[in-house]
Image 1 (tube, rainbow, N blue to C red):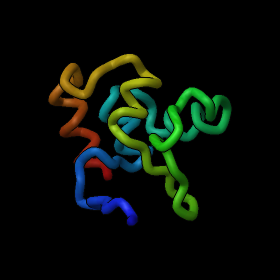
Image 2: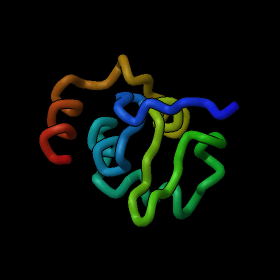
Image 3: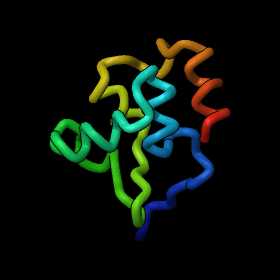
Length: 82
């Protein structure tokens, strides 16, 4: 039986948006993934065509910063710049 995945979940984030949410440069996720792909735990990042999609868990592991610790202004800025 296959597991259902909710693509509307806010657990899945485009790489640019995730980078900005965590207060990083817009290409942070792509750069880290290209240089050190093993830093992302298995199943926390995936490429769809040219788009990288990362999970909250993946970002938390790579940056060491929990989602709950993010600055509200960085989250809002990232959502505006999608």
